[in-house]
Length: 164
Image 1 (tube, rainbow, N blue to C red):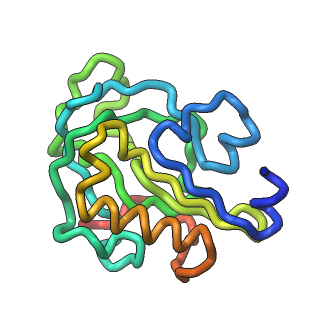
Image 2 (cartoon, one colour; image 1 turned 120 degrees about the vertical axis):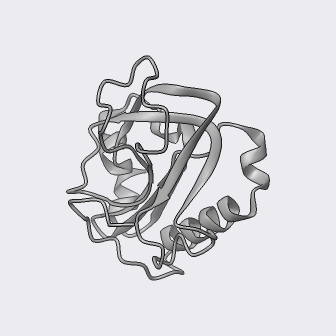
Image 3 (cartoon, rainbow, N blue to C red; image 1 turned 180 degrees about the horizontal axis):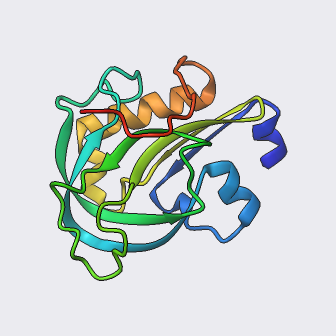
């Protein structure tokens, strides 16, 4: 799998795809989910990092309310991924047990290059109704097209969150 991706194929990861304790895979995906302080049914605010990026054009606003299970990641680095969606900490309850970094960076979706390959990951998708939300489905489709090599998109890592 990892050789295939590095050789030019794509990888699409949705929600629990980041919850696999295989260090080499987690490095290719971009991170490993270690907890979910916002349990299933939690409502958070999600912010688009770059509203004009091809993978997030299906959303109607620069931020949106979202009910789901939200992860915290280990070994995620903006030096290796381009974040597309992140938790808006100013508009989300940061007093949940397990949230140690109240003003931290909580990525929810990203793309990255791995060798010649392309990786798309979205943490959204614990609850069934997520898969009927048109904007989320457009985001998934664009991510699949990116990973397949059918949609050109800038995957250059960004060090700091984009300004809203």
